[in-house]
Length: 487
Image (cartoon, rainbow, N blue to C red; front, side, top):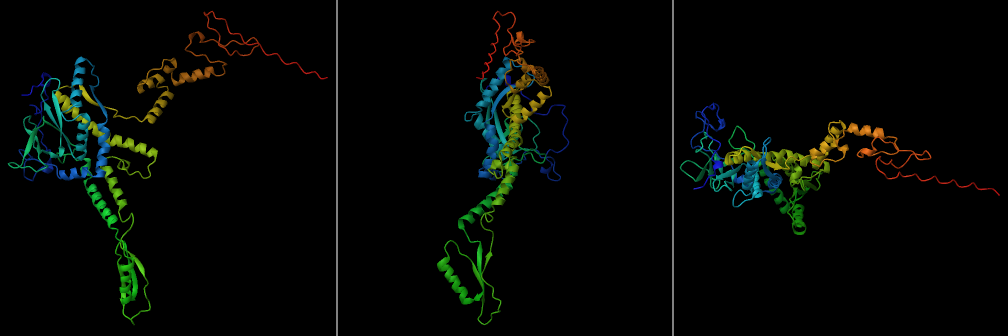
């Protein structure tokens, strides 16, 4: 029997508290049949076409779209830290270290990076699922295993009971009915089910791949057609000989078949006329186009449109699917920031919430620490620099305050604590002086440069009082050359 550490015995209660109001509305109204009560008991619902979703996830365009979200998140650094306004102490440090060690090595097979990759990919395909195991020793009390989210069926009538099955994992993506099939029932404590784009219509979420399902199917069909067109190289035209003699038509066909034909059979047609029935308006030889040729025949423009639809379903830019036509450097930077804010950050925050609520708070029983991504909130350095400059020009921030926001060490000079107005006043005061003294030297503050013996401005600062070093004497003026004498 597994040993549950003492710190994990106080778990969040899953069932409905005694005085909690009862819900009157139906949670999933479109799952009910007219005249039937709300779904309950052993009736389950399942996600349709899981095999097709897995198949489509391995196609090049869909795989590239999934990797555009999965790879950046799996490579992000993360940490377990105290929540805001919680002072760090020895117990908080122990809790953070314990949770961090369990997530770093969630099970015997995975590390944190491979674990995140599997979870994010399943989330993009349709749904992510994590099994929670509690037991072992105090150094390793919680275990996490990635579960194929498409194999999970749901009991929509789950009433919140702690020992009541909320999920059912089926084998081989098979359907399940009472008394037939095989399945693994799982309670809410045993499984974390993360659904993308949740709605009130279905208990399942809709992943980006499901939204792009139809577009990917059309992409595959047009790609197959284009491959056959390019491989067979059938001619896209036929020759119309016009009104010619039947013997001439047969002779031309024989000539073309024996001497010209090689890569493909070109259709030849014409209007055979009988001798003596000429109308005097004979049609000449023409070329009739049967269908487009070249890039138009391969529907490359339509395939590019489908890739645009797939990119929209994943909330990423076309450039991320290798559609880089007319993309300059400025546009690329904007699109990269947009992909980060619209696709990567939301997915990473969903995972953070799952770790905080279901792993740290419920499984471990710790309420004062949280999971934190490092480097997720990327900063636009150019925009930040412009904002800091604006605040500095408004005398709202000093250089040292800006450096503190940037995480840089404080400048030791007193000018680091001066506002922009202070600097401008110092510039105006120093304007016209022969020598500007550093205010960091107290002995020189307020002293004016002394003129030389001949009245010219001195180029050397005066010696501070209290120091016995002799003053520096100016060089004597050069003698004027004697005037030349005319002989």
